[in-house]
Image (cartoon, rainbow, N blue to C red; front, side, top):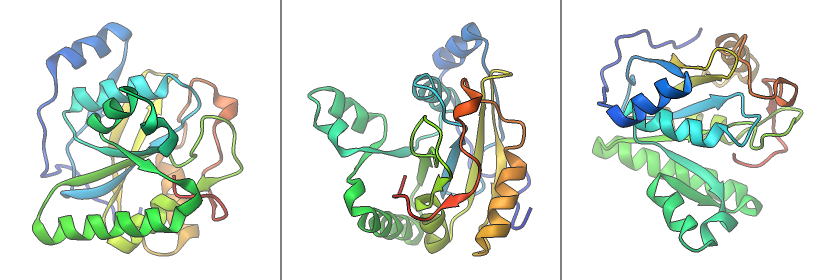
Length: 208
């Protein structure tokens, strides 16, 4: 893999014992060695079920890793639920203004890099749990323009395991980069495998 970051990774966290116990009760395990940098983009794949979100939140708390994520702006207008989404890290996105979302996120991450602040953006690059012909390109544009590592989190329902140990720096060659990403996610199985999108960019899609 080009620009790979082998462990050990310097940015470490202390997770919630309660979330870890809940995951064990559900039969889930995880592999995580920390992060290679204070800023980055985390890809979660495959995304094929509504269960991905609650399991993902439990894993987030178990790892102790603060992350932000994009969500439909309409969800954030729902009373109480919208406030809760923001509390757990949600960032409202208007998909009709995709380029503005990407540019604003790049600017935010660059500011964090200059100040040494922490910020990781977690995305499901398929953008939806139904089958799509490719991935939304927002993650690629953000990570490349902000010059931050991409973390690859495999959410495998077949083995009930999250593996989040692979990180790479994008080269700017999307063919090679997507080939490296596909290699890392090889064998991943969503809850509904037929709904997993192929690992390739669909540049006509929006940011998430």
